[in-house]
Image 1: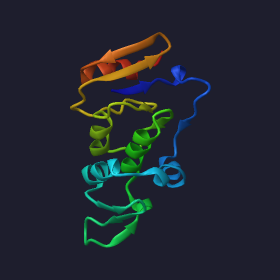
Image 2 (image 1 turned 90 degrees about the vertical axis):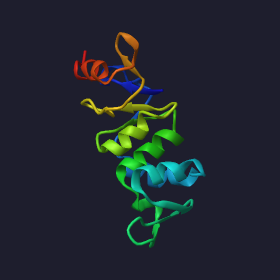
Image 3 (image 1 turned 90 degrees about the horizontal axis):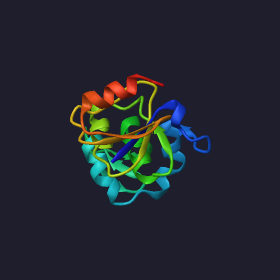
Length: 146
């Protein structure tokens, strides 16, 4: 289940990663394995050739892994770095759907960013932890910063 943090609930010892492209290129790209293949296909419709190369969905051209979309990089950051909190403000609906299907991971955004078909998410605010099984309940909680 994905964990959503409100600003006031982010632990002071944890930084929010806001520039997902740079974090991915510097850290996450170095640890990719076969788990990344499905994510890259679901979000960008590209095939992973090896850790540093993808095949373009348009014409099959070989591209450096840094050409993935920011949404795809964000999902991979969350998947491979479960101890970090990632800002999801640059994610599209396709990336959000994958984020909300992950078994673990931590996210943050200044405003509600929720996949319409989310099944379950944990929300962390200054009063503690809350589990949400409904899009509307999570949206209401998220937009009411305390």
